[in-house]
Length: 418
Image (cartoon, rainbow, N blue to C red):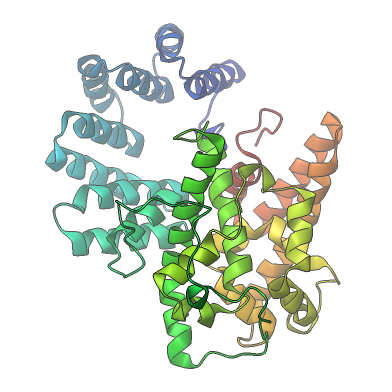
């Protein structure tokens, strides 16, 4: 449950504490306990809609769908139409295999959603798109593209959209196994000793191709790295959703280090060459915010190139500032400044507008605070710094995006109360 959902209704302190405890129980999959707490809370607070919604969630997780339906009916009689209730109804339809009902409910949830709930809207759109994949693939792509545009950090929507792309690199041979020790012919290898010329420029057609294939290359790289990681760790899944998110983010960092050395080399590469290049590094989710990883950013050719030019494109960023910006990179991505655009802005290929200047400055300032937060071992100082970070982002992006980004940076940390 996202941290920004906490405290967004008029709740007493006791109600707020009950709700927070319920969210903690959901995180631990303690749905039986959550149901009991919901029932007790509703005896004392029979008009608190949040507790009814959470009770429905408990019933759904416990596979007690008839009880969930009864509470849904009560919600619909007792309260005004609400997006959360409609979404829960769509979940019931999904479990029952009622795609038509699921689509009707999720569309209703989208219609009832407040305009500023960008992250929830993106989640609902992704679910809507998933429903449409087997019904109308073109419509599904349209909806999923809107989901990604609404929230570029929605990895579920990105994965669904990538799965619909028809590209020669999008399908891996199911019968082919990736063996890290497999040797490819020398003629098929990317020359590891060859210097990447940072002054090489792509013509307009190649730039369009780069933008079009960037997400597909990242998806392929992440899929290969996931296989390698599971093989190395001798397991077949991640330990938690948080670990998977860390892995995907770390994969994006590693991939950008490879890809942006010389994008044209990768665009021209055949599948065997890509396989060799994409197995030449290893991704570890524990590397996501390590000092070595950030140092590697600065030592890598692409980031050295960006750093050498960044003072001209963004004169307010001091030397070495690229590493701080990378700490807060999800902020830029959320505001539609992806790796490709940021690299072009830094290299002078594109001129940043006033808003982009503000966002890059915000990312740098936020990154400086995140670096301090990562280094602090004092709880009081941690709380002070996280509050400063939240306030900094809230001023420019608003409360909801600020709280959402705090989740992205740190997860639903118990020590942070938005």
